[in-house]
Length: 224
Image (tube, rainbow, N blue to C red):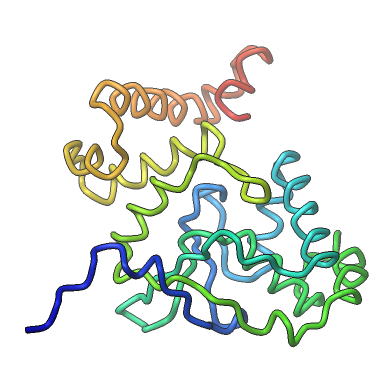
C-alpha cells in the first residue's frame, strides 16, 4: 500500500530550476497592482519607486555579488496549469536580483551601470540554476506565504500596505468568502473587517476628485 505524502513534504525538497525560466509573480504584494509588469525592468522600476524597497534591494544585489547566492531561505514556486510555467510565489526579490546579475542589459537605464558593475563580480554560470521548493499548487503557496512573513535578514517583511494588498487579493479571489480568507491568513474576523474597511476608504480617497482636495498631512496616510 502506497504511503500518503506528508502535506508539507514538498517544503523539504529542493529541485534545481533555471533562473531564466522562472517567472516573476505580478501578484506580489510588494508591487503596485495598478502597474503593468511584463518585462524585468517593470518589476525593478516598481521596487525602486519605494525608497525602503530600493535600499533593501540594493543590499541584496551587493550581498549576492560579494558572497554569492545564499540558499538559506527557500524560494517557493508553483507550476501554473494553464501554461505549465513556473512562477515564484516566495523569493521574487532574490530571483529578480539573480536575473539582473545574469542579464544586466535588462535592468532599467537608471541602474544599468550599477548592475553591470556588480555583475562583473559574479560567475553567471554559478547562478544559472537555483534549488527551489515546488509547491503542489498555488493554494499551497498561499499557506506558505502566510507562515513565512515574520521577517529575516535579506528577506524584508511586508509593509502594512503590502499585507493589506495580500488580504484584499485573497478576498477578491475567494469572492468575499471571509471564512476562507480567515483559514488562510489566521486573522480574526475583526482584523479582516478592519483591514478591508481601511482599503475601501483608501480606494475611495485615491480617486482624483477626492485625493486632490485632501490636506497634505493626510495624503501620506493613504498613499505612503
